Amino acid sequence: MPKENFIINRIKSVGYAFKGVFLLIKTEASIKTQVCIALVITAAGFYYDISNMEWIMQIFAIGMIMGIEGLNTAIEKTADFIQPEFDDKIGFIKDISAGAVMLVSIAASIIGLIIYVPKIF
Image (cartoon, rainbow, N blue to C red; front, side, top):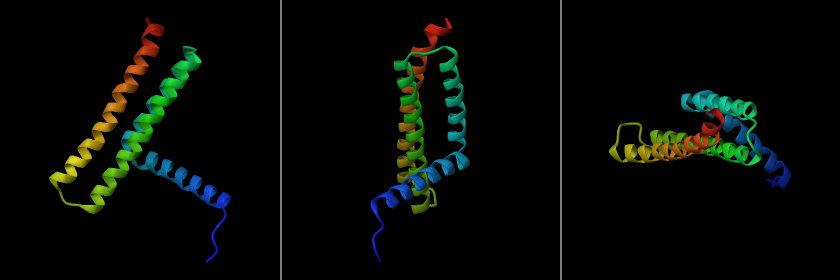
């Protein structure tokens, strides 16, 4: 079987990544909520005319939350596939994964407060 060329492989990889994004948004309630929050915060950025550096920090924070949430979902789905029944060790893994999302969410919230509190008040 001949190997596909580099460009074809990259195009397929991007297609798989977009499929993953759409599956994540379609199937996960937490991501749907986070997408809505991201849209509201993005609108706030335009409304309050935030600086380029504030945009960079805001986009970075949104991307980190979405990315870590995607990894959390992948870990949870893998753990459920490996061990469908309740298991303390699987629960431990899933709790750590959820904790990572929480840590990034706290950091993103602090970034949001730093950006918007002075503009609102």
